[in-house]
Amino acid sequence: MALVPISGPALEPVSLSDAKAHLRVDDVAEDLLISSLITAARVHLEQTLGRALITQTWRLVLDAWPSGGTVQLAIVPLQSVSAVRVFDIDGNAQVIAPTDYLVDTAGEPARLVHNASAVFPAPGRAINGIEIDFVAGHGAAAGDVPQPLRQAVMLLVAHWYERREPVEIGDSVERIPTSVDGLIAPYRMISL
Image (cartoon, rainbow, N blue to C red):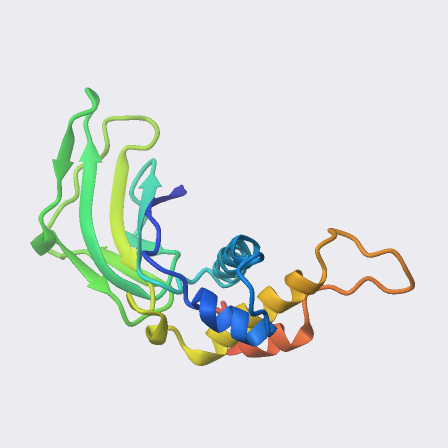
């Protein structure tokens, strides 16, 4: 199983101007650094939470259908499934009709389940025989991202802006602020 990014978000959950206001930076000399810190903070939170903050497209690649016919889509929140393809031995893709599967967008993680009347073909390739393209994220606009997650991005940007070295020398090494953990805690997926 592999998750492959197809298209990233069109914008970040925090604008450069919002981050600069939070940092109290007025000049443009640090714009490139601050922009890269915003992206790094978003990616860090997305990886930590298994969550897409802004709308983006992903591809889940599988070798075979899981037993039971339920595929879990690991990035939440799921907006839609764009395409399901199964490859034959010659590498030709057969597109599965949307009427042949159900998509659970409410669950976390979201699920794709084949309809009771549908039979998914077995992939002909030994590896990477199934591709599922899907769209995930809270929305296309920064305002669609829950405010605690946007605040966590800003706190990470500020933390990394002030601490530009990978390791601090001294009595204590300061890791990511605990306030960030508190802000993102409600958005973690809990598995029982």
